[in-house]
Image (cartoon, rainbow, N blue to C red; front, side, top):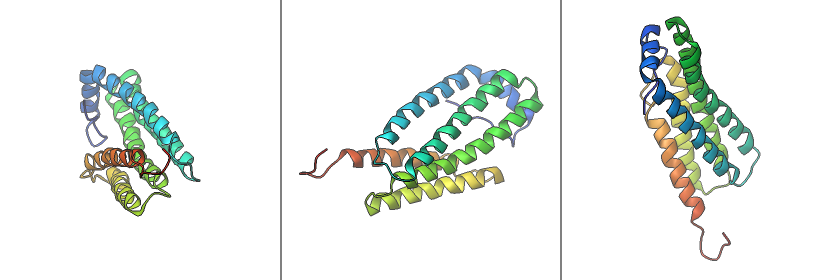
Length: 169
């Protein structure tokens, strides 16, 4: 789809981007909300622990903020200054969302075999580095950290589906 502009760009460029790609941005946010619903169902199926629900709630809240702010920019931010201000809010929400991803991965893997926890902690570390580095202009992990999370969730899901013989499903 499209990568949204950051507050490092001018308000004029941000406003022009949203004006040119409004329909795709709306579709992208709707797809994100639908994917979030599927993710929540998956997360609720995990073995509960003390940290799983609080980290899931943070994940949900921040994902929704990162979905809503671009829509606010489309609807309410007609001036370059407003578009830039809302994009700054989006940047902060995106950074916090990366940290929420890390917390969720760490909580979801509690009680899992060591190899799953190590892999999860590596993915969590990438997302924390992205979340902390993004507001400081460090963008090297902007594509890698989210893809690492998706790849980890595929591996983690497969691990949960595969049960040793003799154990009930």
